[in-house]
Length: 258
Image 1 (cartoon, helix red, strand yellow):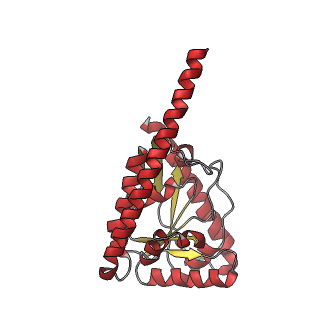
Image 2: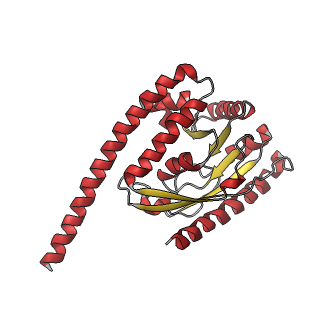
Image 3: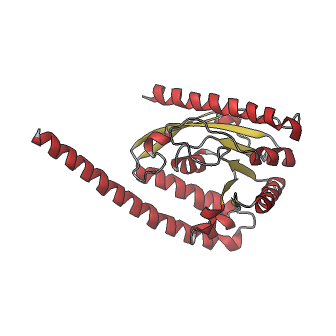
């Protein structure tokens, strides 16, 4: 009994030490990569250099530090030359690093405005062309959607979490309309993505990352030109169904990976 208790204490202590070490390394690495992104600013008119040479290496390194691997399916559906709106479910902070590390396309995150206020990181994200949404201010939210439409017209894709926040239990939450209004406004296709397993490695409300694997499955593009504002609910249903199916595919992919 005492021996088991001692083992549990040592295991918990080891997990705490690892969490402290990993989080410290992530903070130091993030500061360094933000500074590197600032070096790229004078040579980068549209944020493309910062995305591929700062954000992507940053994300890959963090996954490596955490002992997390990402397996994928359907990346062949991604066309780098066509600007699209990528929509995915959201389970964990790891989703951001995973998407940056595997999607071979220049995309701009549509994210909470609070994240854009983080010192240094927020400035780097703005220079990369990421777009902050002020969810409590409808007028500012509309302006953010206009900015996102401009990014698409300039040739960049946009990535949106239509649930608006991370799911606590992994189930798909209610979708927000903003991203779908943007798709109709920009007249571009929607690329559905399903993520599985990330919430088990780093659940909402936790900063302790477990070693392991999660999966990202990319579906075929969904055409939006057949929809109008009055039929936007049908578009939302189609995208939700696609993401739900891709999420299930990701879970199956994890099972087959062992």
